[in-house]
Image 1 (cartoon, helix red, strand yellow):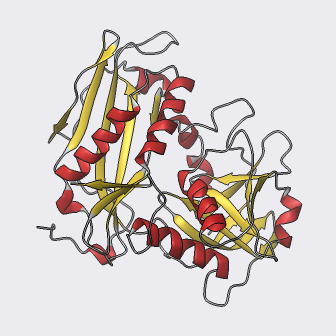
Image 2: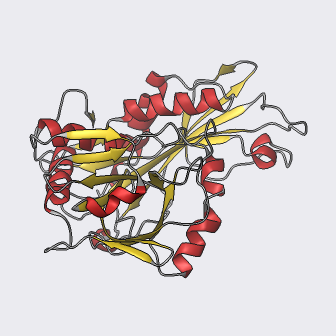
Length: 339
């Protein structure tokens, strides 16, 4: 039986669920892992994660489909991206098959927290790993913990599908040859001041430019960016410092193979953004959020939509969510059913 939650009015926040998955790495190997009801973590005051931020994470969702099934969307890609993060941060890899198994077990154990179909809410999953033993010298930990919890959530942006406003900040998100291409916790720590400053000034998010030249569009603090040209081509920025969003990759496939549109991943000079017809943010949390305005130190670029969102953006959103919710047939391997 589903939990007594006001599903349609959920924000994007944490609600404790019944179970989470925990596995520990010690003496060079992972233990078998288990589901746990304990949501508190105890560790040394000198734990590596507390001293040197040795941690990475992922984000994905589970859904109730139109025909009542409970499914997850492309957890294999999250597993692969976490492997890349671990390798970059000198952390032990949590095997792909075990990652997927942890996802499916955690959703099944908390199935009553998966929001009903049609509510607009989803079950957000947060796998993460951190160095857990005492490390005082600057070096990787010897022991690690992999955990995965879930929480039912509503829209990431409070306005739902209303067009949001971005600003181009004076801050940089990621350095060339740095960690921008992996989902390291430290990337988000360094973005917190910038996002608080943006919110204080009335903006929804920051749109970062490349830190090397500050001339090319990269991404926001929590999502990738897509543009639509005047002839309906879907274009996304290409950079070695952009996090490879699973939602973005899925949207490009949907644009090309479901909607018959041309797609392009390339360097996008900031000066070009005024020539696009639509702009949107995409990611697991945001899904697809239309952008109505970008402000760069007083200079504004606006995107005008008749119905609050762009025509192509809306088609992309409807198609991707249709696949996730079972209204449309999914490409092979995209949907994992929880049984």
